[in-house]
Image (cartoon, rainbow, N blue to C red; front, side, top):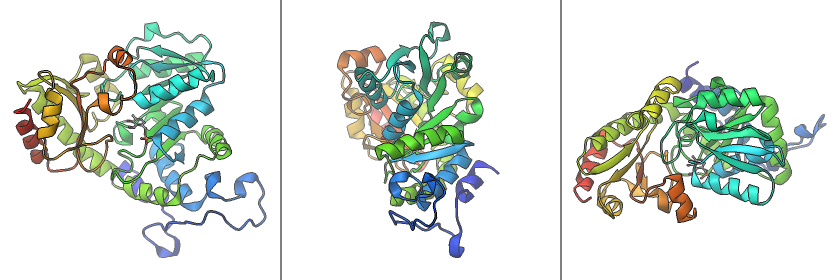
Amino acid sequence: MGLQTTAIHAGESKEGGAIATPIHRSSTYELGEPETFDDIRYIRLNNTPSQRAVEEKLGAIEGGSALVLPSGTAAIWVAFATYIRPGSVVLAPKRVYGGTRKILDDMQARHQFEVRYVDLADPTSWDATNASAFYCESLSNPWLEVGALDKLVEFSKAHGLVSIVDNTLLTPVHFRPLAFGFDVVLHSASKHLNGHSDLVAGVLGATATKIREARILANRYGVCPDPQMCFLLARGIKTLPLRVRAQTESARALAKLLSEHPRVESVSHPEFGAPTTRARTADFFDGPGTMVTFAPKGEGSAKRVIAALKLPVEAPSLGGLESLVTRPITTSHAGIPAALREEMGVREEWIRVSVGVEDCEDILTDFAQALEHA
Ligand code: PLP
């Protein structure tokens, strides 16, 4: 089955003839004669019907099993706590989403593991000494760069590391990490997977054995999603391919407009950025995604352009129906000390655009007029 068919039909119970799978709000279920601990159904044990339904859908989409968690941040934390051996080293990119950087630094400060920050583009610099895991983003937020993911998978297999990838920006529409060779994929499902900017959720995808390990840990520490959120997420996923394909086309058109615009200093987009990113995008992915990061020319110009935009709101998320803009220094990388931000290469004048499903012409017209104020 194709991705769009799977997104619609997988995990739908059709109980009582219902086309839309109902929400099961009950927090607990009649015990009966449980054979194992897993048969005890309770929301905190991550096993009640609304969660199972959305996990079946996500498992089918990812090509493995899935665990839904209360946020993307929770998915990252649960992945680290489950798959990085205590006291070992995790390799992670220098250029990574700010929230992830904070979790890594925090867990390191609590002596749970050591982080070795690496350049994802330079496999010759990677050192696996005492390492147990390798973490990365398939498309980095907000640089929109693509690392040597094929080499990362090879390196991880050769050194017995668990390879973990955050695929939030690309989504399964453009990249299937488990088929590519990664051990674990994760998402902030608050973004494209749900796609309607009305919930916060996360997901892990991996083999059934690996997901079971993560589920046991999540159960133990009380990390569990609400049934209402599971229902909404399953509903959102049904249109994932339709939305993402439309957004991708508009993002490509916007990147082209920006790259040819005299008032634009730089543009990052997987098909318009550095040659290595362009080549890897063509080799690894089925498309470049829905995001564009750019810098207008001149000091203070980012703020002026954002103020002049009529359609996109400035807000700290991505992947919804509506176009959104942010300045990474005030959102995804706020709270990271300025010197470290500088070292990570997060620029002052950057505007990150999450391209929505509005009519493409309207989006382009709006950016063209706003750039007149740069
Ligand atoms: N991963 C990436 C790439 C993100 O951009 C974000 C949030 O912006 C997260 C993870 C965290 O997700 P959440 O906000 O659902 O906790």
